[in-house]
Length: 463
Image (tube, rainbow, N blue to C red; front, side, top):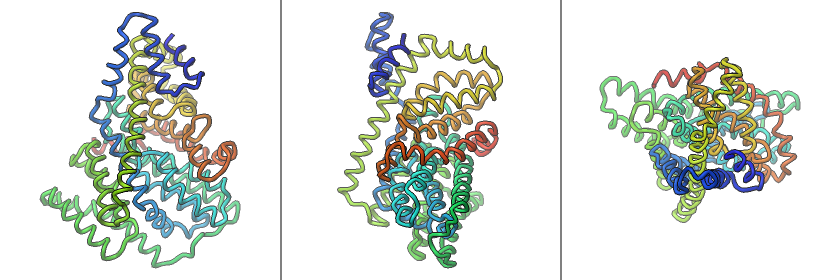
């Protein structure tokens, strides 16, 4: 009966969060087994979680980066690095998304922020709107895969899994996705005989490589000093000072923004801070860059960014709260146990279950926002994965990637609608433009699903 009420509400066009909470309340009123106040109690307890504090801070960090001119710097850096390749701006699109993914944590922020700059530039260089939208949509899925990631925070809280381990698990799959997308860009460039979009400049390319070397070498140098006995806090502080001095001397384009994911991952793996504290550190870093270093962030803009963050956070947490009571009701009424028993009666092979779970999550992702989908699916699917011996960190990455692909499709794909508005295309045209880009996404999904070592290698090194 609970599922019937939920489907009736969804069919009536009621927002998914209200449909979940409303179905739970109506079921309780009809059954008479529990007091109605249970709905409020479970919704409040569902968001009374320390890890969920990371949600508003990661949203704020992404909004600050978007509004402080950081996205333009990332775009210029990516242009210097790969803009001279055939199909240059397509490659720039992917590389820029890899970098921005280390700041925003959401696909929609990537599509709306960096995607706006990229689509405009690609259209000005003669690329079709369809190609620009397709590559931007595909690369936006990197946002929640490469850490930090809001869906990983929600999944980690629901599944009682280390969020730091989930963040590390996303690194290699994120790079795999980026590589396959760049191969797809190269295919279209070869097919259409596209050239580069800027002339190759040894000095410009060399400076970009130096910036990459600084980003890669900085944590290695600090690790070496600390392993030799240097005090960690003082070493990190002096290392940050040295970083700002180098940036001032050489006028780097994007070293400091690119350092955001390095600082986050480094701080979490060394135990300097938790993922929740890391979200606060990301906000502080974004404010230092926006207010003090680049001076592109004004107080009036900061207030607007905070208000936008409050609005987005309220939406996300209301969905989590509503899904909490709905998931609890599914468990209490025996729905989750019944589904697990049915699936295990059908197959006890892990690879068959993963195939069926992928199909289910791809379908659900087309209709539900990722936060709602995660909070509903985790109580149903996680008990089955435990019985089949599937690692919950690995399954979390598979779930998030499935739901990110769902964001690209109607009827509820938010990235689809954002990019249709940015590119001034119809939803139908945008959908058709995205279809070829499902190939690298689905190939990546297959590799990630059936080669768990690619996902778990880094987390097992540190956790």
